[in-house]
Amino acid sequence: MAIEIGKFAGAWEELLELLDLAFSAPWSDEQYETERRIWERERSVVASEDGQLVGHTGTFTLQLSVPGGQLPAAGVTMVGVRPTHRRRGILRNLMRTQLTEIHEAGEPLAALTASEPVIYPRFGYGLASDHQEIVVPKESRTLRPVAGIDDVRVRYVDVKESLPRCAELRNRLALERPAMFQHDERWQQYTINDSLVSSATSASKLRCVVAERDGELTGFAHYRTRRAEKGYVEVRRVHASDLASHAALWRYLLEPDLLSQTRCEMVASDDPLLDLLLDPRAPGPITRDGLWLRPVDVGRALAGRTYARDIDVVIEVVDDFLPWNAGRWHLSGGVDGASCEQVTRDADLTLDVRDLGAVYLGRPSLGRLGRAGLVTEHTPGALAAAEEAFSTSRLPFLDTGF
Ligand SMILES: CC(C)(COP(=O)(O)OP(=O)(O)OC[C@H]1O[C@@H](n2cnc3c(N)ncnc32)[C@H](O)[C@@H]1OP(=O)(O)O)[C@@H](O)C(=O)NCCC(=O)NCCS
Image (tube, rainbow, N blue to C red; front, side, top):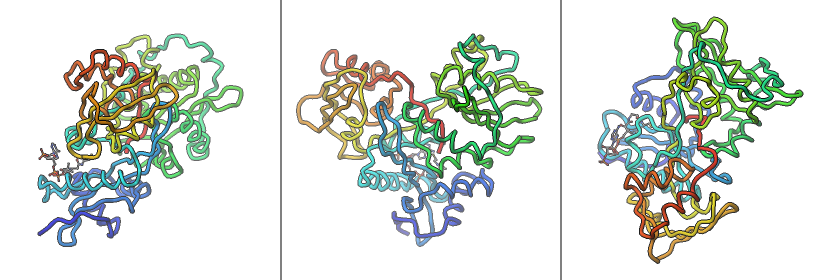
């Protein structure tokens, strides 16, 4: 029977059955309901066989922070193929159709978070952000002194009532942090949904504390507590507009009554907390992969960010999956903006599109990829100059998995 790729005309329950099979049913009904609320039905691409759904990939319409601004980006999600139909090229066909549609929609970037990292590089995705998973034992909670920390008031508030103010603060901070995307109402609700957390024993409901100075909101944290065998604080997110507020929130989170640890699955790799802890070994950080990024329109993507210093370079991009990207691109720009167009003259650098995706938001450095043999330098000095230009003062950090 032939496999057809097309739009989704069925009901959510049909998709749910497919995802349930593909992901081996790890979620509760509430969790599926949470996913349904953020699902963009009209952007789903499906594979069907004889009227039965056998594969799916979804797309979220995102506004992604890139160095110096924001760009429309497609968030790829809910990717699954019916177990009886695996390894017959269905995902490959879904990916090609989806990326073509994203290109036609004028979104220069596609982004995703991966359940299995080895799947996506073949489709041109590179690892563009990482973060740290930490566990801080209570006895190692001591922070180095932070000026102004005692002027910050930390106060418990209702999660739902405080959501608009907290989301506004978070969206403002997201503008300055590559890899974060703007949360509209839908995503704001998603981030406080209790069903997203694993249902291990004795978890409190989601709680919120805010940091304030002179009555003005300067930060917030979402967290819950678990009275398990070894009780701990589970931190979902901490955002603050200044260091003292950030440290004050963490000081609160690191000193739980009756619990022995504070855990957080997603701490930015350059979060000041990691430098402020007196015992740098205490959090035992484990690096996790964050956002995977795929330039869908190389020219618009490269022209859509700013650069740390002047850059004038011809980059040859190898792209076996999206032919319109392959070729030589003249990038010229600096701190105020850039232009990029396809040219025929000799290239200064050559790299694969997945590696361009990896360095696009500022992590890792082009030089590091060069030392790994993943960037070829044709013009002496071009790699070092491009490395500086592509670097960012803040590392990319995705605070909301999807
Ligand atoms: C991952 C999944 C979508 C792949 O679908 P599929 O239709 O079997 O993939 P394809 O047949 O199109 O494979 C395309 C290529 O990817 C490779 N590939 C696919 N899944 C892979 C995996 N899990 N690990 C390693 N390689 C994988 C295939 O070997 C093939 O390689 P090739 O290009 O060298 O021939 C499917 O196995 C699935 O639904 N898994 C469970 C849910 C899941 O993990 N989804 C991803 C969420 S981020």
